[in-house]
Amino acid sequence: MIAGSPLFKGLPIHIVMAGKERADSPKQLAWAKDMLAAADFEVVADTLPGDPEAVIAREIKARDIDMLLMGAYAHSPLRALIFGSKTTDLLRAATIPTLLLR
View 1 (cartoon, helix red, strand yellow):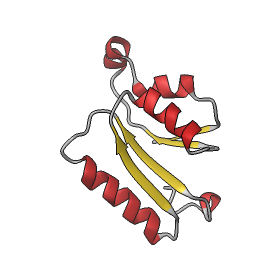
View 2 (cartoon, rainbow, N blue to C red; view 1 turned 90 degrees about the vertical axis):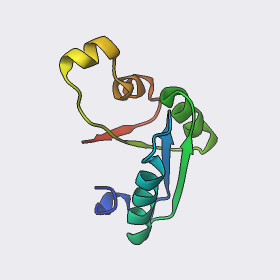
View 3 (cartoon, rainbow, N blue to C red; view 1 turned 120 degrees about the horizontal axis):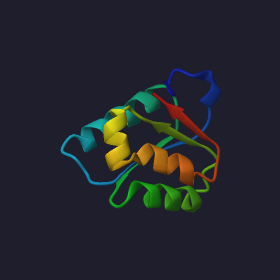
View 4 (cartoon, rainbow, N blue to C red; view 1 turned 135 degrees about the vertical axis):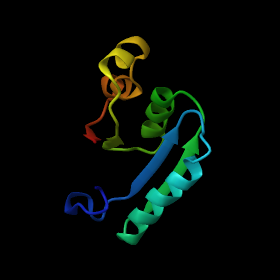
């Protein structure tokens, strides 16, 4: 969505995958970086361990990020009630404009 949008053309993109690394994380990160690079974006991509809310908040400050673009997917309402949602946590903690893409 970002690669095809004229709204973000010319902006540097920082991709951060935070949390527990899964077996397919490097492949997903490489795919996202390649898609954006092919659309002429300047891309920095990192996988960082730790709690996503804390890691992303730290990186926003460290990298002087102006806007957070975040992908999300839905869980059942019962699962979200019992386990919570990292997406919801990040939205609540956001200190900069945030765009959620589904």
